[in-house]
Image (tube, rainbow, N blue to C red; front, side):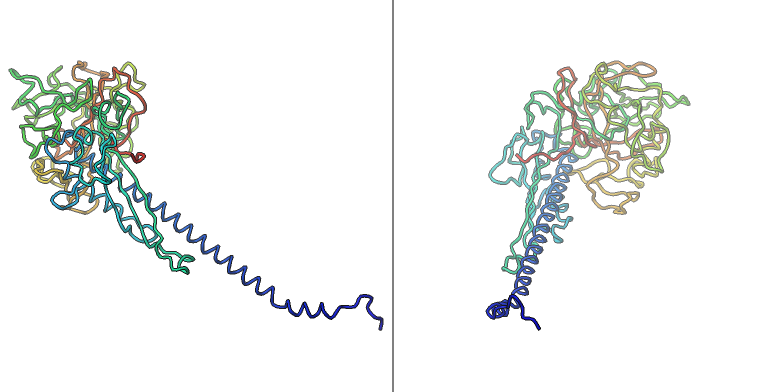
Length: 499
């Protein structure tokens, strides 16, 4: 046997013997590092997702609180003349206000990191950024000339002791995330001079869901009786030049002696004679308001007449059980916002606002209202026959107004307070200094929107309604800037950058 040309040194064999097992150690160390990095990645992703969940929860809570502010009519009482703000914002007699309670309830519904939020703080500020101290939970201390116009609500949500993996090894159990969101209830009435608008002009609104009942710019309760022989004309709902609410404040009990527009209860009555004609033959042109007693097929007084608006596009969100003609569909669902451009004169509108007297609204109004409100008896006008109702019926006696679910409410919460209702609708206000054509169509200028609660409808299309809010948009002569604020309410809510 031949000898190897290169013989292995004995010291090499000895060194390799010392290196045996090193690979296993290096693999073990690498595995520890890989596992640690994976665990750390899981922790980072967990915290990131929890942060996103917290932000969504804060956003939802802030919007919900702003919606309560909008629906309560707080912006319809911008000077807090009735000292009712605190009941919406709180604390009121040691209890959180309605908006605060709703914000906390919504924030608690959404789990952050698999668990409910640890703390939810709700604070308020005026539209011009005014606050009192670090956090204001009682909005009644804010300047009455600012907060009631475009009020802001801020929700701060914190979740501590989030579950973790790698950080537990070091005994770290203090992982937490927090998120903040600020929402605004935007009322354009006088927003050019008050609030967080600095343009000096009015930004218009354009609700996404409008009912085609066009009403005159007249308040049947502010001067009562009005618009009948020997009596003065009705006061306006909004100022056509500035968009300001003419009778700000809150009225309780649906009384006829008005202390403010919010809470006023009256009849919304079709300005069309009950005939077999398919068109609208107005009762008393060019007068837009009728409060006479004993007129056939009309409820009242007091009442405000409406005429049909043109439904020029296909209505949306129409329940399958509510189908009819386009006008009825617009009542049961939503008419397109392009048919209701706030503050824009007809001559400058791509989609001019139009009153359409070729439509008789009576039968469609009865059918549409019964469908959306679930009212079953048009003869019962003093209690609920399935529809949601105010507490007490048609005469809310305490602020903020309480809505109760009717037996027809699809939630099944009969008799339980609810924060929203299909009985709450928006409709346009037109400049009633304009004359309407006796027949056919008339292009008009909308000067604002009225938000009402439908208490009941009778067989002739008369609706007993309560005013929840009002927004004016000016007469359009000043060149309204920017895009309109969109929302289902005439006082839409939106998330904004915290002040």
